[in-house]
Image (cartoon, rainbow, N blue to C red; front, side, top):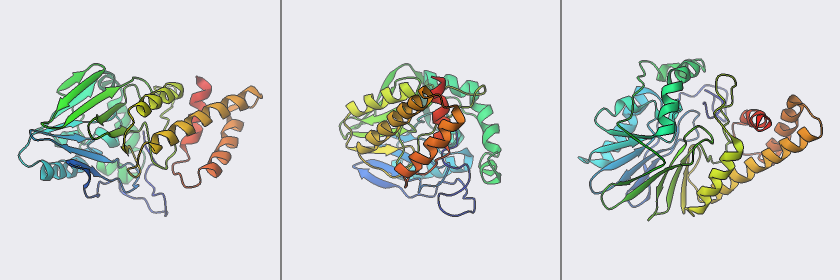
Length: 301
């Protein structure tokens, strides 16, 4: 689902096109991040370079963004073959895959099934977010992966090991993390953001495949990895403190939602109360519209 207010910038009133414009930054030897610049519907992109191949993490939204990401990846990879994986099926993370016709695409099974079930519906939904978003989705093709794995997969890029892991339902049915154990670098997708409220794509009856309690448990698994560098789905690269911040927020949102519900408050009252409180508690966080969705998701649980 949309990650920040669908097509508006965090600062200013004019819509900002969801276009990848960042330049690759080397965060460790052979590990590059194309920063999102805090632009709505643009994810952080990763390129991991090995001796034999290069792995691209997320492809942006639509063919034009995908071409930008592929061009950056080829400039880094040279004549090495490309492997593409995406952290989850949402359009801004994976719907640029059609630009990677010469790459091997890898998904986990839950992610692939969700993509097949909801891919076109999310295209239609996102097109309604405004002309800037619809433009990026013109001519979009939903590209199927070449490799689908169950549970976990390891990729040896040549001198650089990459681990793909999923713990099932959380932000989506099959959020995938990408972890480099030797370098202790973690790509989290939208399980973790930096200074954005957690994204709850909770839209019953159309989509309710998000679970806050399981999401909290997945974050606890990520903490066990003890990463030195964390690349969130959106926002600046940081360290393990980003995981702790996400865990703290979700735990607080759950406990306060339950407390207010136990006191007899209805959903609208709980939303209004927590939106005010949490905006004050996290004054520099963006995408506060997701607080309400998180409240309703926890109430349903």
